Image 1 (tube, rainbow, N blue to C red):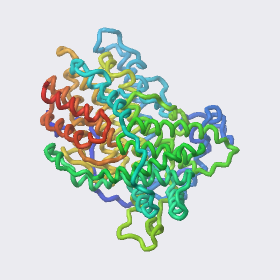
Image 2 (tube, one colour):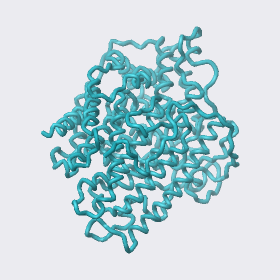
Image 3 (cartoon, helix red, strand yellow):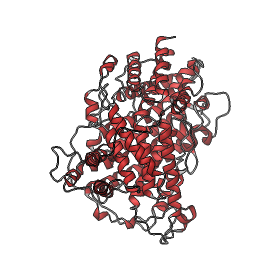
Length: 623
């Protein structure tokens, strides 16, 4: 297959990451806020407007928040446009979901519907779960993600691989290596207050900008207190230590992008951008923070501490430790949310609580899609039905570095208001993608790949096309500076936030197309539907290639381990296709690129990375 050919439903790019933002006045009117609370608005139920909590919110035990408490006049035009664009996404996706349900009900029940099995056609519920459930509202989407059904382990047990590898062998390698990870007891690094300003700047510029769960002004105040008075045992000192740990680990994306290569032979010569001394220093800050986190009381700040601990563990390739931290953050958030009570004074900004909820939810979704672990139940809180509110204003004035150091430094690295605005749109856009992705998982992966053989192929195609329409609509709502061009092979966005959106989009598209690749590989050669699968198979292989190329950038961040796992799944898809003569041109070189990328990271990574690299090498060699 020609790797440059595109399917008819592929989201089209009309800009790239380097395009300047278009400055234009707002051309849309803002309506007065309605009186219903946010949960009732999302559910489309009648709200009794009782304060401080309406009957619906009181019955389900979630915070009751009214939109008219937010004064939109305090938002800048860009923030208002963000809200307006996201509202359009919700409106159009609800129309699309209605079309999905109607289309699949008709196809699965019509007299001319054709099943690929000899058994009677499944019901709409059995066919595509939530996508065809009668009366399924946007606000009632299932957010309990099916655990690990998209993982590389599930591809390894496809029949095409002839049971060559034990079930869940990669997942078992993660657990095995976790028990062997040494714990730091002592360190040669002493905490130095004079390093705090620069590390805080790096944290806010390189880490917080992707998960804005803390209040910057408040945390910088805590940092000044630590500098002046030394470390305490309070939640502020704990947060400062975690921010310093992450600031030590974080590396600018441009440094990673500049050394990127699509040539597997270049990888042995690529430098490591983070040395052992930086890793040990970061572990020192974490060790000091963990001594404090167990002494903290139940509060939003404690939830933030657990969450940032999870982010640290993902930066250092410890997914099971990260799961424990994210799970603890999610559980503690639920306890806090349900026990704070309306009569108790709460100084935490509700917007911070919303962002913390969404970050906990997204992080749990990501881990559970790779490893079979229990859910925390955080998705059952009320915030799932609404997007988080943007900040009232972006940070302006003198840079935090010049506040810490009166003389300043040669180059401040705190985010500008424009960068904060861009980061906020990234955060909301990523949430929108997460919701679309969860619908795909709930539709195609609830029962695992074994159920695909019994699905109705025309219905599957209709649902896949509707999900692709949702992705198109999401892309059309992106501002120009967040767009990317994926129409040319080997072109990777050169800015971090568009790059992360690019890889997330390709991941969801790969989920959509993978069932069709499986059917093309495993259906009998005389099956009447094989001829109609061609374009979907081509798009599946295209996504696999793009994911391996995109993930070849050796950039350490919160999601690096996930991207390595995506590369493994993509490489296995290419190999599976080649075993049935469905390969695309250059597939072997693409798999070799994935192998070298795994080799680059395997020292210090969990055991699944080494094992996956060995498996791919064996499959390539044919042994």
